[in-house]
Image (tube, rainbow, N blue to C red; front, side, top):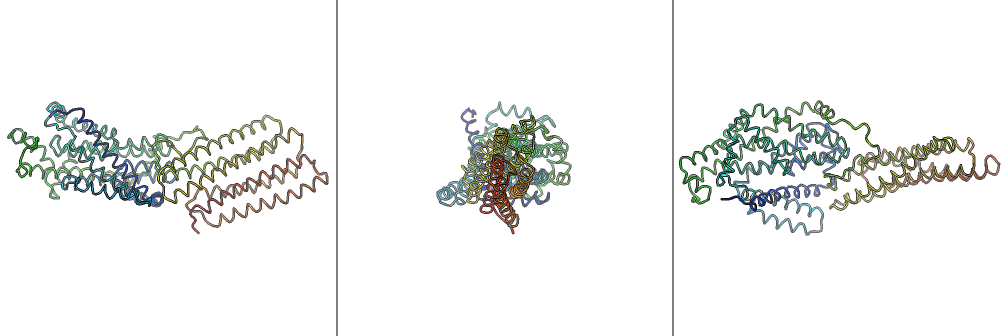
Length: 604
């Protein structure tokens, strides 16, 4: 049978359906879990072993190590997880991804999955049309699960029948008899194939089908699966390209972990593959190496039966079909055991060297010493776009935004004490203007990112968080405007030749002291929104009352000082403008505190 372009496109479509099923299933699970998923992950990475279990469990649930490692990169990019914590989760993800292989081994050939696929889609569609967001997410998960197995069945139908295509078979046979060279070549095939389709599970499914049809040996199938462990790292690498240094280090850690594991396994590949074949036989599933030998022996000893076998013209109860079926099950178990054994051994070795491993990754991906301090640190524009996870990134960016605006408070106070019309004054004022412009752009960038997050279907808590965060960044930007407003007041003061005395400078500095304290408390609360406590909130409200009381006191005192001729009326006007500007800054700060109190969790 000739293999046409349409057949190849059909194979690509089947692989696409398989990958799309995993994507929909993963996203549905993330949405159903909502904000809890982020909280659980951050709580379960306290030490390498709990992180290992977390990575294993999450990957087993969403059936994609690529998806789970992209999530890990997202957490690190958002600052919710350290590099060392992320390594443990990635180690676990490599073990958890073997779960897909076991599902395929246990159900892909023993039961007709297509029988359950359509009823499953029926249930899923009903859930999609319900009003509850969680039910819709579960419906997406079920549809993704159904598409995954539909794609698997279609891959089986569209993978080229190498036995009926002698030219393709001759090419494979030429590369299959080169000893260790064949192992390296097929490992490279697994790497490239997985890098292209971005899923080791899809590669595993294709190799499993090819091997059970007797096209390649069990040993070479293991080599392809081994290579796929490196190829699967392409997804988090792509995801980290637009992230920060920590995200890039996490992706590099994933690549290095799989690369080092593949290297040691290749050094002992033949005995390791033989050990897994022995384990398969030990559990009563037969020797997975027998299938290739049986099919090739059948070709030479009984070519008629061989030809009838692969054109599906043998009777259903024929002895050869029964033997092939038993050997197919043996191969499927053998590959699953190989994949699982390799990842477990690899993790058992690497888990003890996590700290050293982190240092190596930090050396390979050094910090950018001259990185633009005004670029967004946590928000990325790449593949890290899961809505619930994006909120965590925006929360961290919002905290950085507040810290940068806090620098403007320092600059404005410094400007008050800088010699008027001097070069230093002009440079500092220009810097203040630059920071205010950057503040405007940061507000816009964060708001756009939050709006993109809001386009996804979020939990009710997620929606409330986004609305609150949009309000917070608006208040922070208003603080920046107040800081630049101080500079503009000083410019007017210079033009009118008004002079401040020591008492005015002293009172302004006292007011600034209150503003500094209020800003620091606000930033501390923004840094840990998950654990905001009642006491610091009360302290913030008390500080705002102190600011208001001082403003009122200075206003009354200012009138008396002007009447007593302590300073000129014009100086008093600019003096009160600065005090009023600082009082408004305090109002914006307390508005942020109000929003935090009303919309974010607190633990007393």
